Image 1 (tube, rainbow, N blue to C red):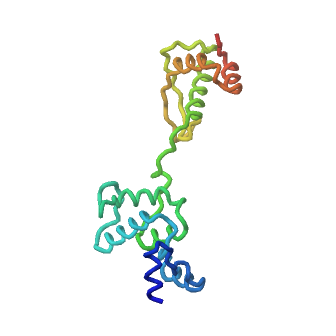
Image 2: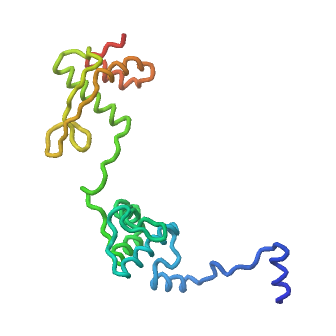
Image 3: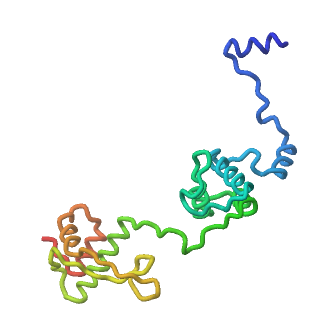
Length: 201
């Protein structure tokens, strides 16, 4: 039998594997003992988790800022930050491990970065500025270098409230660009601009 086993790899034939041979009961027992014994998440995530745990076991504090603690080439502060900001994308067992083993808490709403504005968001802001200009001036013949100031909230919508900011938009250049790109604008956008006095020629 041993000769046959030795000949199998020598001939390039597959070697029988015991992987996956665990019974369901045994797998459940292992899960109860250590939920991370065979994780379904990336190995790099698991590696950083263990490096942070080793750092804490050695008496260190939980790294909360990028670049403050680097172990074996891994920025543990960056990893902790990514875990806190991406909490909702973690599996339940990952959340449990981070919270109960490492003491990591999900980031509060005011800690999360504001979502980047899309091109559609930017277009909507300029349209708001164009409407404001039209209501004030009665036309949309905006000088090329004109800057329009509008007040918007955190969500990018105009209106009143505590979380408001003033934005300066180069409305004159934007209106000119929309006119020159008329052929590529959707019908809906053309109608919105025409409704506030846009002249296409």
